[in-house]
Image 1 (cartoon, helix red, strand yellow):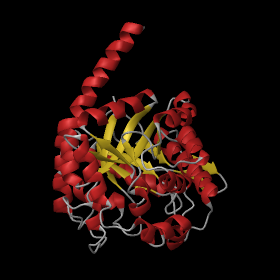
Image 2 (cartoon, helix red, strand yellow):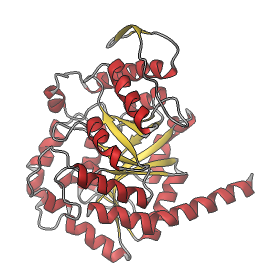
Image 3 (cartoon, rainbow, N blue to C red):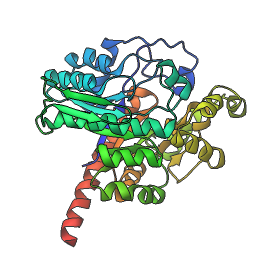
Length: 364
């Protein structure tokens, strides 16, 4: 079954404001537990599996934020973003296991090696791109050693050295011995780490044909592949396209490219983000439903599925044939888009999944 996750509403972020308007508002990295817990309750009702609590210097600590919200929720899981190099793997496993103990395993992890050398420097991390992934591979190898519970953990790598490591708090879950691990990135290095240490390679989208080709080594290794993107669904295609263009309405893309977003991309060493930015410069519609029009203005994750519930559910199933089984969505307006997806798109996806399973059984 395809799993759907949604980006958590940020503290101080209006639920029903467009992306372009949001950039005009002052943003403070402060939790808003009441509003965020209400958003999670609506996510549960909409059929979301987990809430992404992402990571950056401009946001609260994701694990602490999730811990503060979880008592006000019933079943939603938290997809907590982490970066290796900022914390000891032993201490990190202790934190994750503690969270799992009081939530009965309601935690997934989004492993991010970092996309901005400048921001990494804020935390005292100055490794280049591929070395950050090499360190992440060691970080997760240590984590897995603790989660396997083989006894005292000993590890002697290039980045970590653990001697007789022990943690008394176990990972608690009804069906897993470690948290589900998304490894984010679009580089060969990220794909390698997803294969060796992760459960899912999480990347930005491309056409289904290109995704299918890139996904093959991961799928052959018995791992999943997921997409991080946005969604703009409306009752008619015209309404959906109009809503998409309203996101960039009044914004001078050429001027913006000389400013904040272009400067961010120039300072990033993320293979995935740079590739998406260049793709958006050359082509606005990669498919009849995959739109890059907001990427150059608001960033790579704003590449969006745009269309009716039927069109978007068909697109999701087309990606399913390419091997995609996990999604992390964003949408604008934040809450309305999520609720609409749960009511109008998700039931169609489940129906089509059921039909696909029946057809596969008949063909066996």
